[in-house]
Every structure is written in C-alpha cells, then in structure tokens.
Image (cartoon, rainbow, N blue to C red; front, side, top):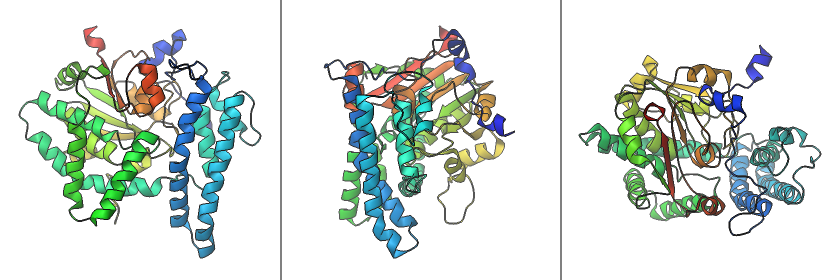
Length: 409
C-alpha cells in the first residue's frame, strides 16, 4: 500500500507523448542564453533571487503567528533571515555548477531525474527544504487563509455579474477573463507580489472601510485593464465557443493560487462549465508551494468547519454534493507540474476526461506550454517574469490563452 501511494503515474492525456519520448514538462532550457544574450543560469537563478524577500517576509510572519512563547516570537526575524541567506548561497552555487549535489540536500537534486544542467524542479525543491528546516511546511498558510476569506466575500458579486449576461458565450468569455485577472495574485513572482504588497498598503491606509465593495471594484478594474487583444497567444474566441457548447463531458482543471485566482477566477469559470453540462475535477497540489492552494485547503472550502471560510454559492455546493464537482490531489508539491509524475487518484479521475485545463504561469506557461495532449486542452495564465516574457517575445502582464481542441483537428 505504501508503495502504491508514493508511486507516480502519467496523466492519460499525455501518455502518447511520454511513450514517444517527446513529453518535456519544462518549457525553457535554463542552460541556454536568453534572446538578449543574458546567460541562462544567471537569468533563471535571478528569478528565484528576486523572490527571496517575499519568502523571507512570509516566513517571518508565519513563524510569529506559530510562536508559542515570546522567545520564539523574538527569534522569528533572525530565523527568516537565515533562510534568505542559506537559499541565496544555494542559488549562487547552482549558477556556478548546477550538477554538483549540495550536502544535506541530496533528495532535492533527485528531482532532476538524472538530467544535467540547471533545473526549475530542483530550485523549487531546495527552497522548500530551506523553509522546512525552520519548521515551516507552509510559509504562506496565513496569507492564503486571509485571501480565501476575502475572496469568498466577493464571489457572489462576480457570479451575479456573469449571470446577468444572457448568452452562454458571453458568460464564459467574462468568466475566462476573470481567470486572467485572478491569476495576478501570485506571491511567487516579484512582478505580482509587488502589486499585492502595494494593494495591501492601500487597504491599511483606507482603514478597511467598504472592504468587500473595494475588493470587487479592484477585481473588476484588473479584469478590465487586461492588455488589449490580440494577446501574446490568443485562442480566447475558440475556447469560449467550445467550452460553452456543452460538448465536453468531464474536465480536469489544474488550479494555481489560493485567493482571487481560485475563488474569483476559477470558481466562476467552473460554474459555467458545470452549467454547460461538463463535470469538473479540480486538481490541486498535494503539499504546499508558495501561495498555491492545496487539495486539503480546497476541500475545506466546501466543508462546514466553524470559523473557517466556506463556499456558499448554491450551484457549486450542489455540484460538490452530487459529485459533479470534485477535488483531487495532483501529487505535486511544486508551482510547476510534471504530468508524467502525478498521483494515482488523479490518473484514475483523468481516465475518462475529454478536457484538460491548466491554469497559471507555473503549470501552463513555464511548464507544459508546448506539451502535446491527446484530448482538448486549455492552457491559460499571465506572464509575470521578465525572462519568460523575453523568451516568448511578449511583455510583463501578457495573458496566454492557448486552446487546442482535438475534436476539430
């Protein structure tokens, strides 16, 4: 039984690519120079370096919240600073030589699967290990819970706005645009974490009055201020037509961040899928990574737990109770995903799915953007790293909406 639980499986929709040896989860080769001639290792390690202050901040706040004594509370800033120092030193070593295993971190280097060169999987794993050594298995737990609670207060307003539209196509189009707006809540990227911190500072100065209305107005403004179309990759029209048609029986939706990304973006989108007759399985991380929602946290939103934030939308609740909306852990503990190494439960759920949806920069852009699927697939997210924008020929904040419908090919 233990071996079965820890064994990793292949998502059926990419099984042909895996069998052919053509499936590569990571979109970019971190060893290659960028189009502006920046050395690859320098560019990609810098992405992780820029995120260190945000991780240090969240570690400090979480350690303070978890402290049971004044001594532990006073030690929190220095402990968080030790994480920043340790992980920064690790990145320096990786930039020089990514193939030499760092003592004490052997298990993290196994994530490369024997491949040489700088690895996103390894850098993510090393970061989580550095945090775990402080006793932090989830440094973003506090902010995820806060953002889930606040976003649930806004969900009803967003749903009402979508429901006011007459045609299924118009409703799906607005819901999808909301997914891109929601995806800007990402504390793992310097670009979006700066925006989040600035917004939080503005709320504090405003005293919190009218917070629900302000949050809804802010979400609408973000959605309406998305870059003008056509986007960098823009299959929105074909996605809307197909997804609202009712031709898909079952969708596997890989979710990304907690808070507005999940609740203001993915939940309204899933409502429209459900209304179109598509059953939905939400696939979330098995273990914490940045502010990505976990399967346990997602399930808790549909469970009556006193004092905990909970979904109250009738359609979502009915669908969850009837089994048309389900949650499964993906087997992942990273912000990207390797679809050739998923959980047994997800592999079982995906066996009869005719639609796969990958949400977020990590799962749909930095991994799996070029992957070939045997079913229809929607890959959507917002570009939040300048290096990614450069490699794709776009700019920061560009939406990616890549839809491939095997039924029409």
